[in-house]
Structures are given as C-alpha cells and as structure tokens.
Image (cartoon, rainbow, N blue to C red; front, side, top):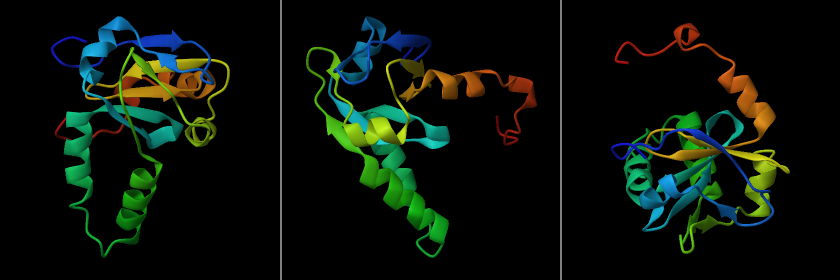
Length: 139
C-alpha cells in the first residue's frame, strides 16, 4: 500500500477457506471492512472509510431513476461487514458464486479498495490497453 492506495495483483489461496491477505494490504483493513458485489463481475473489499464514502455517494443517486434504485439495492443487499482479525476474510458462498470464484482467486489493488477476481475474468480485463478505454474528460 503506497500512500494509502491499494496496489498490485496477488494470487490467493483457494476461496473456500478464509482468504489470507498479503501483509501490504493489512493496514487498510485494520479496522475491518465491507465485502460487496462490484462492477464487471468481481467482488470488492472496502476499507471502512472508503465504504462509507461510496455509500454516501450512492445514497445521493436520484430515487426517480430505476437503474439508480436497482444499483443501490443490489450493492447494499450484497454487502457484508467483516472483522479483520488475523488478516483473513471469509467470502460467503453467495458472493463466491456471484463472482464465479473457484479454486484460484486474484486479489487486485484498485486504489481505495481491493477486488477479488476469477483469473479468467481478470485476464479479460487485464488484456485491455489503457489508451483504448473511453474515460471521462476529468481523468
């Protein structure tokens, strides 16, 4: 973790056991965190401060927009808090199935959170080139 930013990609032990996070990720989750479904078919591990900031932003989405209501429901319904003792996180069976996690699991640093990926799904994401992505002008 460089300057509070979660970085890098690491293969973890099988997902049916509690996942042991690498030492460099431990400080971000010292106070616990939230595991949730996330975009592109992965799961996200949120440090409590990052989860709180995300939740605040999501709760400002307009209730009059059906997709905003659905996003809100799906994200919060999938979320589970975890107490981060011994540096491990247990991924419930429902979340494992949602992300297609099997014998191999990749932990991917994503800045303010970390993501859990099935290696085949991650290979699709990682095969994209940064310059080919359509980003907002602010980036």
